[in-house]
Image 1: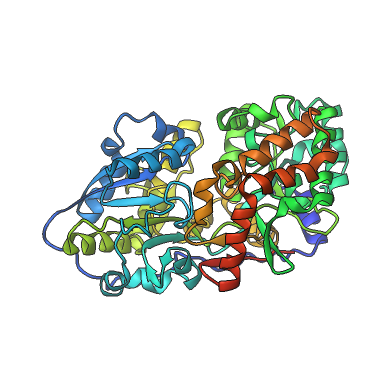
Image 2: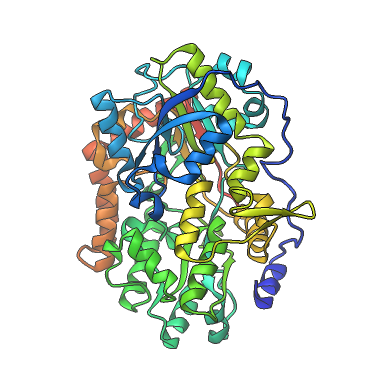
Length: 519
């Protein structure tokens, strides 16, 4: 972290002490002994956009899977779905009734792919199994996480949770910022000034955008109009994009950025792969990403631009002093057990997940295999942080197999390096102090199934109808002043039904979670 950035953070009153909290501290080893019989079960998971994983012909042949099987005395039969079409593949899986023993869902039970499956009785309630066979899980998982994987008062999903629901961050090339002579931006206006100065330096993409505004919503966050989010207005649930004043201001800001070539001209069609490629090649000045990836970002960018300095800064604030990105659900992913399997097998699977909250599991997922990827020296772990793209992707694949734990970060590992300590500092003292709340429903609103173009495409991308109008307005194909007409179109095409159901469930307190903005 640069000295200039430290001074900026000190100036805005951020304490220098790194928080000591962690979801993977000391665990009780006195857990149920694994049964003598071998445990074999099938499981579907997401690729999490890991490029190594998505190139695999058979995920089950990877050494990380083999080692996990050895440690847990299991025979895993994993079926992996690419993240880009995860929900579609999940829906097809349910439609064909080809459902494995365990199903991973990325979030609670609210996404398109899982919608209706819990209510339909496809999965078994887990309360008694967890109480009997999962002491670590029952001790560590917070109540808020259980609420998001429960239905009608019973637990159906075993969660991987987040102790800090704010984890996306605004990244900046501090070496470029220093060359501009400007301080880190604190407002939207200052943000634009920094982008303009970077443009004058010859930076190709001062602010890197991406299709559907996914990980490209810094401005939407500053105006608190993330199109996937809802809020309570006069006792009713409404989308945040109903705020015409702030929505039109955000759209005009994006249009200014496009007109002044501060964002790519092709921003509406940039894929996740191209987005990452431009950042890692050193072509971008500012972007957003999960704060956990600070080390990876620094390593990858430094390979292309050795003098590059990459840091996390507070996100720019809008007129109401909001800023940042969406606050995640308390559940990052969750695991559901097929009702058709035997009680004994279900108990074994619960023990498998409970093992993941042991010191042995934490060491494996954090560092890998002893005398292969790490070693003990004088009683301390010696671990070399991956540096090449291939090493990073391979390492990330293993850490992604840590199905049940506090997913905010791996503190034991991050404390070993300067990059990791900088990430912990930024997460605990910058990212945790910003973020935008919403209204969520567990399980999902039934009316979502009737109007797919009006449904937020996961927590971070708004409804297709809304995103399409936003893009046309930024490109000038529609006047931004017509935003009220977009709201009326949304209502007429099914939005009224969605909001009527949402408001009714909110008033009944029926499977509703309301999170407030951080400031």
